Image 1 (cartoon, one colour):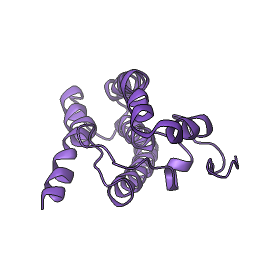
Image 2: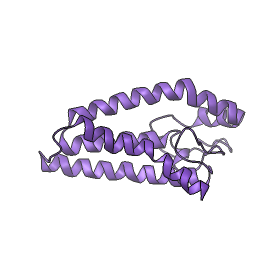
Image 3: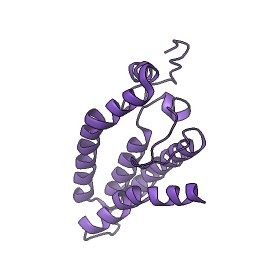
Image 4: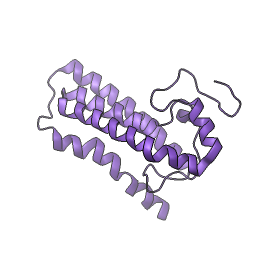
Length: 163
């Protein structure tokens, strides 16, 4: 039961970033252009798919949550993590970009840029040093072989040296 409560509480951050902030900063949530709306919804669904993959991996393999106050206990290097080190943030950026596109919102697009900058600083100053401290050489090797934001064309298998 405690684990279920931790998982539920961890959704405060994505709900805030993906729903509450966009609703707060955008006054006109209406469809202005059907092709942009459809494209935005497709993009948003792709980002949500990435988020679902990431969250399930955090739970199943990492034995943690997506929240920084209850991180995975194991270094996750398989699945989508074999292509990009931060798929959760990549998924959020894709969802927000889809939201922006769907309603042609410059305000949400600005949120995308600010969210990326804040997370890039967070990863450089806190998360990557923390992962290095917690997982040592295993993380350093992973970091050398898997890109931070943009996925490579094929999954990396850093343990066997294949790239």
